[in-house]
View 1 (spheres, one colour):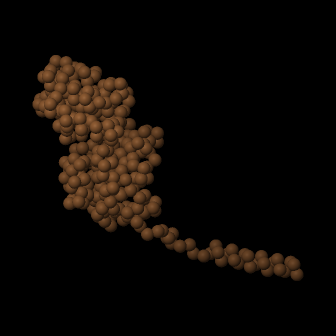
View 2 (cartoon, rainbow, N blue to C red; view 1 turned 60 degrees about the horizontal axis):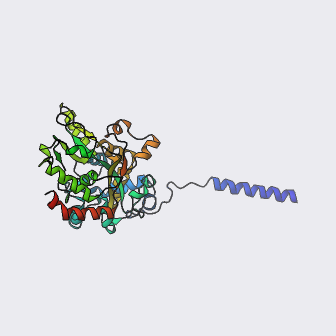
View 3 (cartoon, one colour; view 1 turned 90 degrees about the vertical axis):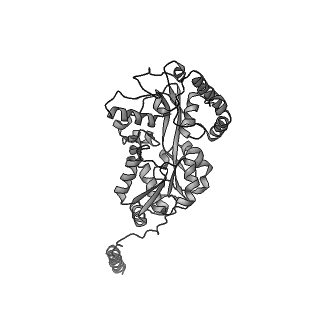
Length: 359
């Protein structure tokens, strides 16, 4: 009796297992619905393929404040459009960070490219979204909730014409006879010019607005402050701008514009990316962020002489374009980044004192 029961049980078990193994597997695993407003790829789209599909259905992306000759944005935009078949509408490419915010209600951009202080001040306008490479971004260069995060940056530098002046080894050298110094705009209105003033003020690892304004006042008194960039032998500007100037000189067949980053400390700053909370194309906006922070996107910034925020991670993983990295202006200086309160205090001081002390 025992043997018969065991045999019967065995036959039932075998049939049961056979029935289970022969059940047809579903053709497609059940995935949750796409949520274009989600704060991460996994939460909103499950896979990169579904994000691409959703973005393609939207068909377009609107960007603001991205000049095509700024950190290689022309190639970046074209590469994104070609890879995903998404039209990129460029509105007000010359807009400043503050203008991007002011024009958002009317122009309805999907994404922003902003200075850090403008991004922080307007964080409620942005939708949280953490790219797949989130952990590669240093903590002090991103919002904890994912509303904004640095994409690329640079170091303040001294660009100079070696045919007319000697290589400066410090900002103090610019006070010597023969130097004619220019800033890329009014430091009370232009971020790069403001940071040029602050870079010249660094002493003992600290930047102070009063010291910077005093330095440029001394430049003017010495006759070394150029009226325009065209007449200058020196331009104090971000290294990606000065490196771009040097590349243009070299391509023109003339003696090259040179770039120096003197001192033990160098002023550094990053531009941050954000998705509009009211993005008309939310999936395309998130795909744009994934592209910018991918290895390819970060190396495209590098091609524009900017320093990608994931540069250290790319180096560690062997995905950094070494040939492009070798073209960056060399420096062993330690980066110094102004805090938001430091920036606000310094800008207030410049607005109050620049006209009287520099003009």
